Image (cartoon, rainbow, N blue to C red; front, side, top):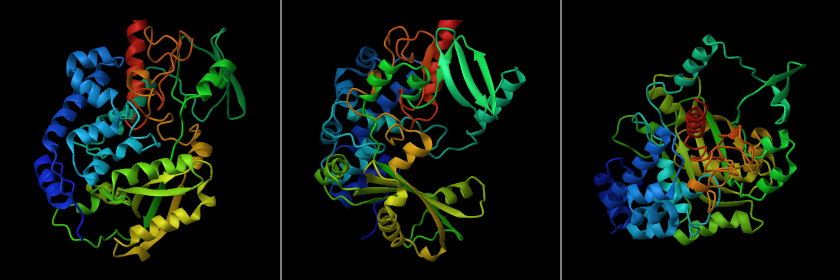
Length: 412
């Protein structure tokens, strides 16, 4: 059984999924409509616009807004496709960070949202042209302007009445003033630093559950895939291994790690060929590297308590590789590790689950969203722009840019 090839060209992809998956739906309409939605939300990113259903209805029309923003992922996928395999592939990003049910309202929006972050001809998270250098250059500009950086500091408290931040750096205590304060942390930590117990209690009730794991595998020689491909640089291609045959199985496995005691309910593995992709960018590292993004893992135990998951995943992937003996080291992280190492409230890479009532225009922590979408709680000069805010952590850095854009408009 040869793999299905996922072509960027939708006409080629259409033919492939007809032949391999028996798809009889309308991929062209899906891609055209998705492009309209992506264009709309990207424009909102660019201008730092607060997400608005009213604006979506005006620009996209009520039909597309209801289908792509308000509706469920199940309804969206059923509208365009007939094959379960197509629906699983096109809808897998719905559970990329958590286990939101495909029947929940608003889950359709995760699909275009996850596709909105590819810029400069990048695709599925690969970037070209050294985009990562932008932040380095911005840091240099800020330093030349006299901006002070306090890296590796431990914030002790924030006094919102006196507008002061107390922190410790290299065993010395500091206190600095602020006019405006922006948090790019997880959503709950600021409430603790502000000693605002009421707000902390309110925030605790939101859905932060993460159910994704990650293995980074290091190889002493470049990975050789068993399946032949005629395409250049195909060793750098994104790969997927699915464990579910039907959409119902896919849904059941995503919910199993929430509603049962199962620590692992196999669904899919996304394979990022990190080392090969770096070589395409002319960056030659001493080890080849594959990253496996794994669904679904129950929140509660750390990777060292769940070695059987790593073993299962590695055994499965090694079936597709000619030189598994070249794998010299692995690093495994579960949702609980993400909580303990990076302080994600419940191990979700987007901090707050992309779920009903936590998406699009509801993805904020402001008590007065009309005054400031990125305001934090009841404060009028404290802002939040971490991964829990719109759009999400997977569209990296965008919430910070939008927050700054909005703040600039109110200050200047």
